[in-house]
Amino acid sequence: MQTIKFELIVSGVLSILVGIVAYFLKQLITDFKKVKEDVTEVRNTTEIIKTEFKGMNDLVHQRIDFLDRRVDRLEHETFKFYEKKQS
Image (cartoon, rainbow, N blue to C red; front, side, top):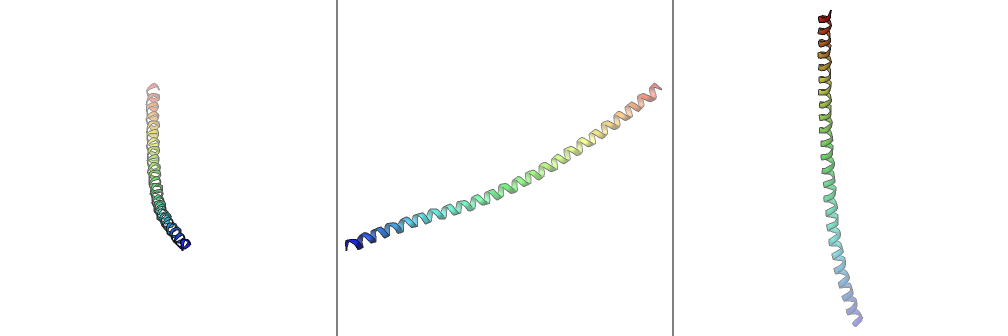
């Protein structure tokens, strides 16, 4: 009789412990899903920032090229003017 009571107590305690472990595993799985979603969001945001930076970088290079051509043209016109003036 005492053996049966002991087995019932042990099985009850084990059932409660397994339930607690299952609860925390469920919480852990939920947290992993949230982390996965957050990583996906960060990855998408990073890709957007990279794309915007590349666009800005291309725009800056276009602006530099435009200003470089403009300076070259002004230098050419200025030197051409001085050459005519000296001749």
